[in-house]
Image 1 (cartoon, one colour):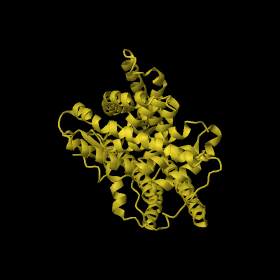
Image 2 (cartoon, rainbow over the protein chains, first blue to last red):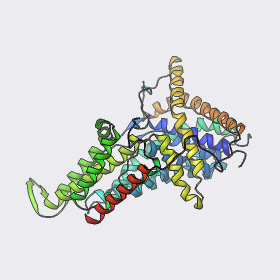
Image 3 (cartoon, helix red, strand yellow):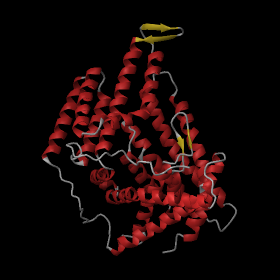
Length: 184
Length: 265
């Protein structure tokens, strides 16, 4: 077993608990049911701290915890596309983790934005496909599921992402940089 | 102020019932079987029989129906919405006309069928989470994921992280509340302003919260290493999952019923 592995595991566990708590503090509820919250924040932090692999693992665990706490299942494929997969793809933000270094100013904020949006895009794609499946199953023919699904998902994901980006800068300064990845 | 104390995580209702005491693995498999068969059924008789089957499950779980109905609340609008859309948008034999809107026979049948399906889907999953604690669901997920070990899914690690998360949700929730109170006593304001300002105001909560949680994670890691934790291989469990006769019987019954219903209807 690798040296840091237990530490990464416990950190992912805590991050997932934080995500579950943040999910219950909606900043803004939408009329159609989506809500803007900071649940992606802890997963993004793990991804930027330990890389994409750990970030994706944190996402999967968060999805499964959501599933154990109270699932909303309307189709077998939707189960995968709405629970483990979208949060796993949020972890993709970690592919830019070695680019983030707030001490070297300049391009870092750009990389951070790119990282947050990569994660968000991953989550969007998964929820978007799930929306298409939902509309294809439950809406009558002749409607266009792509547009509905895209509008619905963008309407809460984009604000969530922007708020995550606003908050992640001070958090990164305090957690990823100060504690350091190479501390142990 | 955002009140955190009244948040209840999960839907689990502890009872001592037949359904509660079933093995979580069996319950997850039963749930998936029922979900799949709900998609294979194409007429009302099928839904009726499965509906009765699920009702029997709810009654034997001894969970009060009001908890089951509470789980249905969020989906109610979706059910109504799909029903209405189908009523008016499906082409076919017109049975009722209301101005420019017309209700067709095909639309009525299709809308009702799909509403039944959604309704039963939510009932099934609610029953699973009402009668199984998140921790025992995690145990079940771990044991079922072991099957996929050959494609590299670290079942034990995933379950361990889920357990840590579930264990620390209440602790961290308490901590969040403490930090909030501390910041409010220093004059922090979490209520006013637009959404961006309100989010910015969360920073004084989030930074101590994150740092504390990561410190906890570090301490936990040290404690685990001190106790020679080294992953899934050869690890034993305090609570052993054991498949009993009742589990096998229930599984057999479910498979027979769902298979019959799926083929016949």
